Length: 264
Image (cartoon, rainbow, N blue to C red; front, side, top):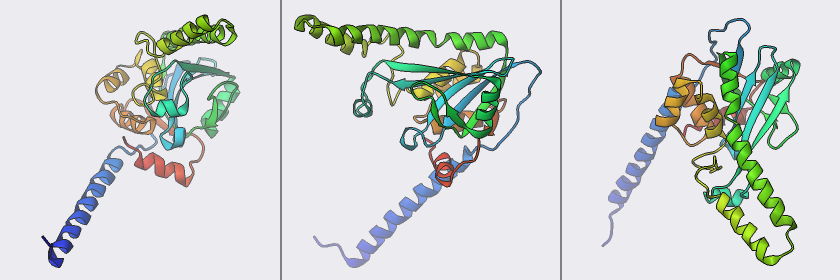
């Protein structure tokens, strides 16, 4: 059965109109959660909490960190990353033990970082140029509570490191196979805060730590979570108006495009 020329033309036109409509809807969604710089209420001698994203980190999906600043202005950075799995395995959705890297800055270094966005600390994934932050004041007690949330990640790291060392140095093939099986099992242990690229990544860890003291973050993580750090920062920032919004340094054209269009 042949399709007439007019039918083909109408069919192609219909597809183009449908694509244009979808693009228009997507553009409207991008505009709807676009963040603008805003301040939040600050009080003297409080600690600060910063939820920060490197827009073009992780191949353009973004990378999130958490920054705690004490009353003296010194900063502590928390950055969660996959450790047990390779990038290919992570892309396949395999879970594994992650690494919670921690870096400490002086008051001066913290001020420079918040002004420029350039993070240069020793440790895994503690370097990069960060772009946008949501922030709010916290009490010294809230500071302590958030910092304590890193403990389960470190405990999982220690378990993995101990098993890996035993596997690496074991000469007996039978015992080596047992350690290898234990390493695979620990990467599936649901009681541990495992890294999963699509369901529990750097952004989930950062938001989870912040949620220990922030009800809005807790509700957002439970009910509105998006897939990417860029999407989550914008969606949460739009919802939680009591958080301030700031930019760190200058964003390149590519970073601005990513920040605007990544909403998932």
